[in-house]
Length: 332
Ligand SMILES: Nc1nc2c(ncn2[C@@H]2O[C@H](COP(=O)(O)OP(=O)(O)O)[C@@H](O)[C@H]2O)c(=O)[nH]1
Ligand SMILES: [Mg+2]
Image (cartoon, rainbow, N blue to C red):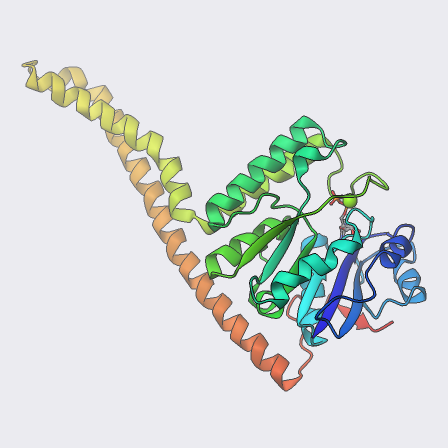
């Protein structure tokens, strides 16, 4: 059994050595542990520092492509390198390495394809109440869409089985953390959470530059993922006010007619408005149906990609699925 620990890095030369030193040297049930960093266009010599500290593999993006792309590049590289289990952790020492055996255990036991380190956000002192609430909202939305029971959906401290790694296709730019859970839930992969504690921050978050930036990103991601993975529901919610208001205006007319009020004349304006609203509502629902059909096609494409990756990996080909022009890999 081969475990690859992957760490995404964007200018992490300072904290990476500590993060690497914190990784376990042995894990029960694992014969071989390798490390892989994704240097996402760092300008501070992160890749060189990684090589000097004995990292087994370095994947390099010539420019900064963001965490979601880095995650996908890392997963693709791990698959090519024959990983049976992949652990993803951060370079800023947020996650204590001694939890890695606990993360890996459910995958090794065949109980899960994805194990998430639950940071128990409520207990983290340096997170503001607003941030905690936004994180809780994100996790709730993900539970709702994915049908899983994940308490801490944005935690980046995770273990994936090879099967899960093959299955994921990250499509949004911002949050691979939320998207992987939704895909896992929809694909019927086993998702398990284990409680972990976190280390105090070593530096301010790079992903959340400010509270306002965080709220904007989180709200945008939640809305987009909802529309993406539950299109019919999303469009129905949008259509509901139009349909309800339109129906109410027509109802008013019928009730008044039944009560004996004669003539359409008095209602012409409200009925015109009601008809317009009903038509807009119906159109929005139709968009939802269309989006739902597109979603089914996406599932088919995902299945085809999964089989293709499996075949190519079996043949030992080295195609990069994330973006063949962006990724240059050098083993360091
Ligand atoms: N590949 C890549 N990694 C990033 C980027 N921004 C942050 N990271 C990495 O993602 C991990 C988490 O980032 P961090 O700033 O600690 O965000 P936090 O999760 O909010 O604490 C670290 O290992 C960073 O190096 C980026 O643009 N690209
Ligand atoms: Mg951090």
